[in-house]
Length: 394
Ligand code: ATP
Ligand code: MG
Image (cartoon, rainbow, N blue to C red):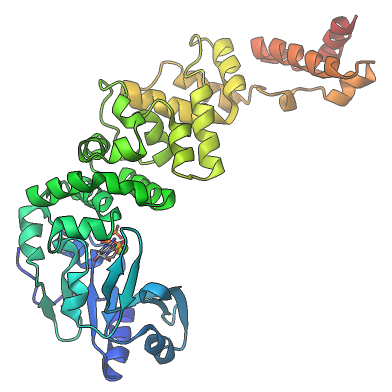
């Protein structure tokens, strides 16, 4: 791989770089977007690193957003109101494994030196078309290696999240982790305890979403010792016989349910959202499939699992690597609009009360009616159900 002499940089980025340079500051494209471009899959926007301080950036551009000013990042809005991140060259003066105190007024090379991996520490000057690669990131892109910038043990101790980032990038690009970086990561894994659950969750989710192989990503977590600290459920593992999930399935809740027996416990520990934890609980509750593939059994199952049905079906497919026999039955039921819940019944609680039922009897009657309707959807006729309700109340 050679550095292309000229990179196509989008106009809004070029304009921001020009403004900064005209005002006497340096402006470079840096980080993940350059890496992705060199690997041939451009997707992310170019981040800009500059010698201007956050204050100076805010003064220079008419419309800015203080996205991460504490760490030197200002969002600059272009004329189409698209936000581009501009980050001041910084050096981390003190670190405690989680947070850094940052210092400005440093050089581009200082800024590149505080970045995590060599492949993330490359810079390109969008106006002068100059490359800066003091840690031979290009060589590691060619060799498909994740290698820490500088002393790996020290870099992980500064910020333990870097261990998880190494695993994520390794799984995403199918790059090996350089032996020294790898052994330092394993040695430092107990430090992962210090991280906040939210940062760990973001890494776990992003990793699942971007890994070429979800299984390899999970293995990396186990082998590095990250699983034993944050997701011990991964060690107990799942049925290892199930195949690699297809690339079209990258839903982190579903994949956590595939890889662990107790996804709700994992997601609660990782401080996932209530909606995500609820989804995991419903998956655990199951049943994981209908008792049989006949329409009645499938309707009963759909009625029981409610909104969890698509997740349970997707999980079944992931585990078995094929479509369940009952999947077309589910589709037919959905297409016909067969009644599946009390709310679908042709009679309501009020109707049952009007027949003289009260208290728990109302629910009991509705349940019995639903049961009959699940058995045979054509029974969902108001007159017929009222007749049945009267019989039940006798
Ligand atoms: P992604 O595709 O996940 O966005 P990225 O490399 O762009 O990958 P970001 O989290 O967006 O990752 O960070 C942008 C850049 O900032 C990285 O490329 C890296 O140079 C630097 N960086 C981010 N997090 C860290 C960290 N914890 N320690 C050191 N450098 C970091
Ligand atoms: Mg990025």
